[in-house]
Image (tube, rainbow, N blue to C red; front, side, top):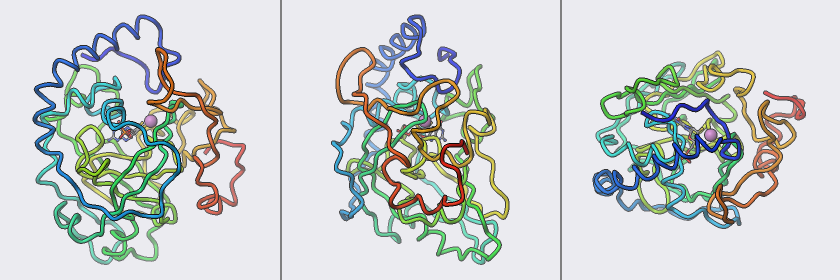
Length: 315
Ligand SMILES: Nc1nc2c(c(=O)[nH]1)N[C@H]1C(S)=C(S)[C@@H](COP(=O)(O)O)O[C@H]1N2
Ligand SMILES: [Mo]
């Protein structure tokens, strides 16, 4: 059973006892990783993608960190749990049900998605609300291309997303401690969903998505905190009302629906002014401390979406 820890406490606040438990589970992960790693490896396949102009200049986070330091509570709450516990997860066959306020609702197979949308490489910063960050070479395609296919109706104002529920394959959904009322849910406003930066990712580092990163398909919205990047999506629903969002339901005073990266608005329990860039620098908690940028550095592209909002407040 994973060590209990309240959600979203940055490593810098972890007590020595928690640290011991989390290091112990890391050792376990290394041993278990050998068996599970093989199963996972068989599924990771090269995935072709054309380069794109969406590429930040920051140094890439090593693939090892991107695939072993994860948040995916369906597989456990420690950072090492998703890589260690996702070997039984089956990302194929897979379908996504796309419906709600659309003219052409449909259930789309992942193979159809991979063959009908041109895959692009997008090098984006990812900033977790816990104040750590990475730079990840995703492979994916604009969510707007999928939305076009189902023809949204005029009254569709939001897009809701849902993660798969499979307790047999996802140990975090079957254990004694259930941190979340499954399924994991999130959503976007229509203009955010249609923004060219918003992608559905199907791979990273030139390969199909590892299970721990949200195989076979997950959302990436680079100007928002990482928890908006919902993984292993099975359902997309266009709605008139603002959809529920798992972290907002769990702690509405800590996690908003919008959750735009904002160094000026601190989390109630920690500062959001700076972040630890994982894989750079050394020390016990790893990661070079750098300043957090408004909208995670994408303000030029997205600030206009929020022109009516007071950016010193929390949404
Ligand atoms: N279904 C699901 N999606 C999820 C999460 C989760 O626990 N379950 N964690 C979120 C959080 S908090 C972050 S920071 C990112 C982490 O993505 P990564 O592990 O690929 O870096 O996934 C997000 N998507
Ligand atoms: Mo996160």
